[in-house]
Each structure stands twice: as C-alpha cells, then as structure tokens.
Length: 128
Image (cartoon, rainbow, N blue to C red):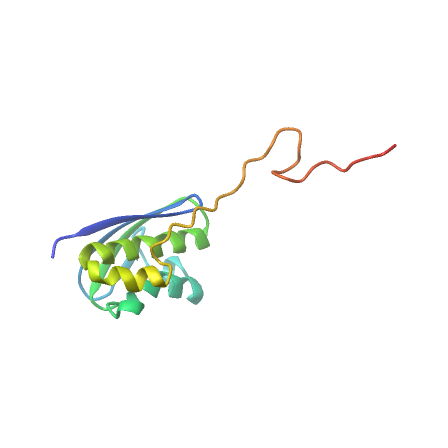
C-alpha cells in the first residue's frame, strides 16, 4: 500500500495526514499522540474512526496540524482519518457516515461587528 493523504478541517484548525501500513503509531508535528494531546478524551476523539473499524494497530499516521485550539485540532484530525479510511476501503463509508465522522462541522466564530463590543453583544442601553 502506498501513502494515502487526506485533509480535515474544524473551526480554524487544519489537519493534513499521511497514512501508511504499520503498527498503529500516530505522530503529530513530530511528537507522539500522547505527548501532543495529553488529555485522554482528545486521544479518544482522534482514535474513534480507527476503533470503530478495528484497524487501530494496522496503520501508521504522520500528521501535520495547524491553527485552532486543541479541541478543534482533534476534531479536524478525526475527520482527516475518516476520509483517509474511506479512500483505502470505500465499503467503510456507511459505518463512518452513520457515526458522523465524515461530516465537516462548518460552525466557526462569527465576525465582530463595528459599533459593538462583540459579534452580537451590544453596549448597554441607557434611557437617560
């Protein structure tokens, strides 16, 4: 198997992954998964598509993560992994889609409007 690459985005985070056959090693920005995401919840989020299909120990991942915070980065990585798994085996698409791993979450921060302190918050109204 050659190297499969995929892209995942969430908020302002971008995950570019390169998947190849291996032993289940995940390297993010030249760091190990447990070092980059110390939280077990975020590690779980990243591994969800691999665990669902039971291929966690079958592929090595080299990840380039950029932008956003740690939650957005972990969810962008989950999307990229799911997309790469579909490229490898198209029959897995139904299982991944039913769990919502192939849906790009398009929610992003609303822009700040002029004349207001935040996007929707207005300055306090004064009657007198």
